[in-house]
Image 1 (tube, one colour):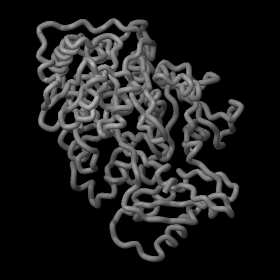
Image 2 (cartoon, rainbow, N blue to C red; image 1 turned 90 degrees about the vertical axis):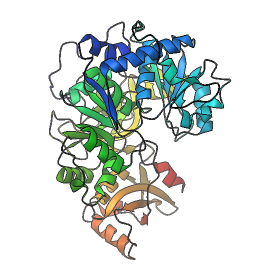
Image 3 (cartoon, helix red, strand yellow; image 1 turned 45 degrees about the vertical axis):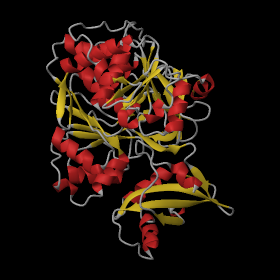
Image 4 (cartoon, helix red, strand yellow; image 1 turned 90 degrees about the horizontal axis):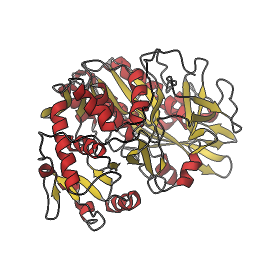
Length: 524
């Protein structure tokens, strides 16, 4: 399914010895890029050399606490300079950062601490309390930045190591565990996904090929770096490519995102479809902010839909390259500048990544027909497995394939179109219903900002089709508005796909990364 795209010698070739900090920060310094800006943020910036000084200082500080090779250390931090320094310092000394969303509550923090076997933690003072309650379990200490309490190790003091010496980066194997990310746990306890050092080359090369870096690039992701998509696109890939990352501190409110793009000169933005829709819901937004620095945006996590793409391109003037990713790998494939954009599609694979649409017997389905989307498991970008859960690992990786759980089809040009999750799609009147198709049609109707389609159990037809809609304005809904929506849909999709139930809400339930939680609507 890949077009011939020119790569470079050594593309996705994994050396035997590899360390993510060595492959990113160390290589930039060795190339003479120490004075270049590594990160910009509201009120400041940090060069590659200054970043290295902090990483080396913290590395020494961590070692002084007895933290070393193989130790799991929980990072409970929002997007901030301390996150970058902590992650790189831990990886540098061979310890394993364990990433968890900074907004999770005490019971969730306790679960991840226990499940990950973390022996220490790094956090900010204002969100440290759930970790302080686990002080006995975190036997190598709690490191706290921007304030502290008795018993904490002050982050700022640990940075004050001898910056005149440069600790050696640990000589790790490319297959050694490098870091862990935890899923959001929306369908059960969070899973710990273990990634190896090889990930930075395998996935870093794919991302570099997909959107070739430019010298003046400033990359920013709106999601928290505890999620692998944002970690790669905003932190590790910019570092490896020698460009600048922009740090968006705080929640991803549309106005904050827009101000950051304007003030920090963001050229490549990574976000989710929800954020783009919320931005477009601001009347005249294209005239309120200077977004001229953007050369392209990216969307992942949920369907962008053609209506959102077209409106964004018409009003903002730059493309949105939708892509498909999973926490077990990060980016898998996507739209990109190498080929024309097909709005609504998630693009197609790049060299080195094999994706197929197969039936239950692992046979290819005809072009245009829906099947299971599978990824060749023999890919160095893949995770090592789920921490302490071999059974779950075997459930998704078997017969030579990673089973995504997504249904999709490929068109005549090899572009892939997501039909929905296996457990999102449902039958009504015995006919298979793809929520994404109906949601895309709804988004093309004036006045609709967001829509989510879910089943509503019905004894007669199995399931009614239920559409939950967020409108662009807060005006009262007129009595026949739902009928107007149904009439408009009949001009776009088959009559049997038109929702019998239409409801209006102020907002849809979302995960911490902005992904719509369908299950919450089904359960209600």
